[in-house]
Length: 85
Image 1 (cartoon, rainbow, N blue to C red):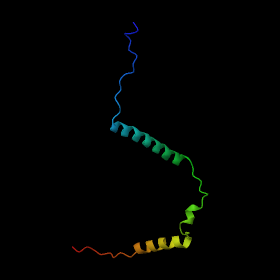
Image 2 (cartoon, helix red, strand yellow):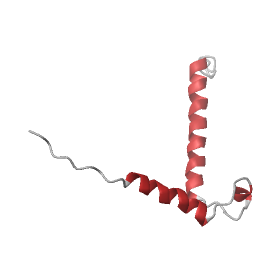
Image 3 (cartoon, helix red, strand yellow):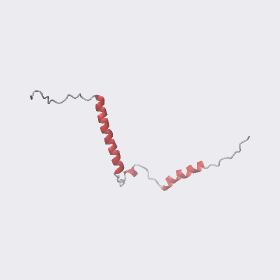
Image 4 (spheres, rainbow, N blue to C red):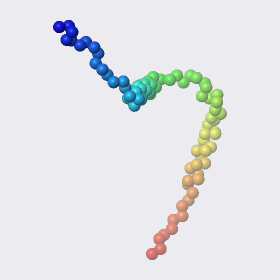
C-alpha cells in the first residue's frame, strides 16, 4: 500500500532567461519605487554647506539684474497700424 503513493516533488521546469529578467526587473522596479516614496516622505536635513561651496554665491544684485533687463526687452512699444482695405 505504501508503494502506491508517490511523494516525490512535482517536476517544475527551470525558468527561462526572459522569466528571470522579468522577475529581477520587477524586484528592482519595486525597490526603486520604495526609495522614491521614502525620499518624498522623509525630510532631508539642509544643514550641509556643500551646496554653496561649489557654486558662486548669489547676491541679490546679481539675481535682480537679469530679471530687470528681461522685461525691458519685451516692453518695446508696438506700432499700431490700421488695415488698409
